[in-house]
Length: 501
Image (cartoon, rainbow, N blue to C red; front, side, top):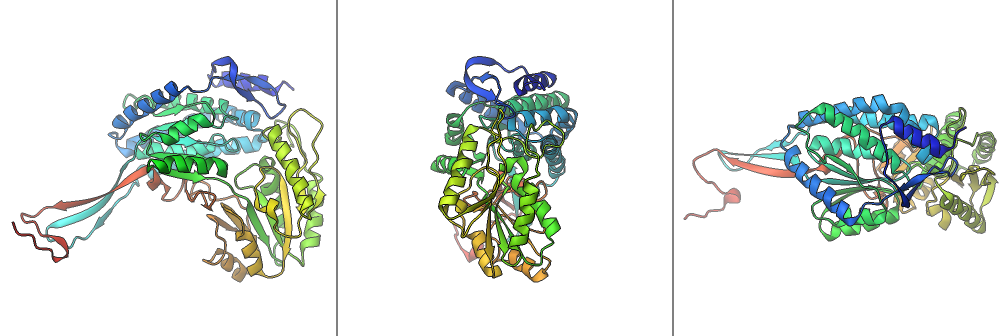
């Protein structure tokens, strides 16, 4: 099979993308085999300034375009994504290491959110309210906010942009996209697809509606600190998100954050174990355990723990790990060597804290950071369990009382997703109650994934509290305005105030 770097270059060419390769700069390397595609120049401070200025000008024009018309651009984007789906998915596989079906699924998610946003463009509803003043009415409206900076992570290199950009565009906001420095090439490809949609849309689309800025933390920091960008949406590590939040808050801007997960599953003694094993395997090892919704902690009722662990061990040892381009592969590589080192260090710490590695954790002897997914039985929820490691490590702990299990589920800093497997309605409803899961997503008899598209995606606590897309998340991309209109010939005051002049 051709090297991943050559495959990557060929796919970019088919998509009409010719990157400006430089001798030294941000290295584009495929995790599939570690091969180097080339280097990209990072955006200079001057380039960042130019992008913000162009987005500001674009906002002046785009906010005058009616929202349903703005939705037409997103509809065309969805069409262009359908045309480019196979090649974009190939790039996701080559640059992020996802298996083929996951790459295709991520691009399909982009298409789905475009469909969602098109309908939304006719549903940016405000309110009318009664006024206590005779001859007056009050209403609440939502207005375009301004340029939006979108910072994305490597694990969902294009879908997260679409969650934000599709909503921002129908709301009247241009977008500046700072992709992960590990997955910049697929962002350039998406930009090419977007520009084809703009060309079909017509002349009322100003230049600069979506721009890509390649670079590292310094580019994200410049965007976060600029007062011309009223909203910064950032997805990635808690460390990165906290830095962004401080910079944006320092100028009283808005931040929309979707950060760490460290997600748990509570498995009761009544659970359908056949269903649970499938859900555990997919959610714990899919994308090599690098999703924000990956399953990290498995909390099992002690009466079924031994049998379940034995079934999981048998399943894990047959999971095919290898080149994500190959048919039948279920687990591709970690994103880079640093991730493999972090996984190894986490396993060492788990053992030092009393854990037992049931299976996995070994590094495969091949190019790229390929590892066997690991199951670790822990005596308690120790420090390493409460710390999220981005990799296929599943920590297993037991419980006797459901209240104890829910307390364990909630006793971590992160708060993205959670789930319970049970056939008892009472247990399910307790888990979903106000004293149940404290996460932004809480599922029953499905793994911690879910809430894509229709539900507002995001979480609580160290996850950041933001909701990027779905339901009424569009309000994050707009400004609320209360309007009072006097249609009388007098000026009555509220609350009985008299002020006669």
